[in-house]
Image 1: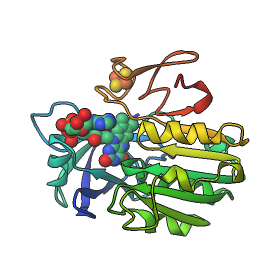
Image 2: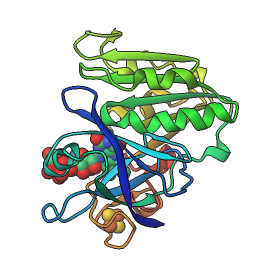
Image 3: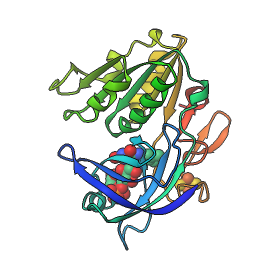
Length: 245
Ligand SMILES: Cc1cc2nc3c(=O)[nH]c(=O)nc-3n(C[C@H](O)[C@H](O)[C@H](O)COP(=O)(O)OP(=O)(O)OC[C@H]3O[C@@H](n4cnc5c(N)ncnc54)[C@H](O)[C@@H]3O)c2cc1C
Ligand code: FES
């Protein structure tokens, strides 16, 4: 676990409410699905905010985020040269060593960004990766998946791009050895239900309000089939077979 003040390299607006902030990577290796607790402001809100790694290389850590409240609004105001406190990488991430063969990445909303680094790492180890990306309307990050994916399928609820409907409609679980999903819980429950009996193993990345982000406060604990687990420490990625849904 590393905590440092990293310099903002850039912070750009992608859609009406989605931004990407790049900071210098202080030499960290990131497992796909891991996140950082970040804060770039003084005073309120006092707690750092959890944001997943969108892209990572030896020089730059990149975070894609939606402005939903005060913390993310303040983050969106940061400029090149500002200092951002980053604590991480936090959590476990997807079990890359276990994953092989045909892999579907199923993302919804701001669950999509962490699957981009995942696509890069899995394609790098020889997996055949398909991305199914679901949006309400505005599409973001889809082109970032293209270098690493065999196919990138898009759905929008209003039909403005790609398939009109839910991303789970375009997933064909029987084609895959592994399905990795991140997004709204209702979407991930639907992925798990659709994949039942298909032979695909499903891993879900959960979202939960977080305070410490490092396993100390127990505030993000969830009930699983094997007892209580902290989303920030034992998660955010869980084998769907463990989830008490
Ligand atoms: C492990 C993890 C990884 C995440 N990765 C990303 C990411 O890559 N990109 C991204 O845009 N967001 C991500 N989030 C969500 C992000 O942390 C919240 O949107 C952010 O903390 C909101 O802070 P705020 O001060 O702007 O809003 P607040 O003022 O704290 O809240 C504004 C609204 O957002 C809701 N909200 C706040 N936190 C969450 C949360 N964790 N889950 C669901 N709703 C929430 C609140 O209920 C409220 O309605 C992640 C969350 C977790 C737990
Ligand atoms: S946020 Fe404190 S234990 Fe997870």
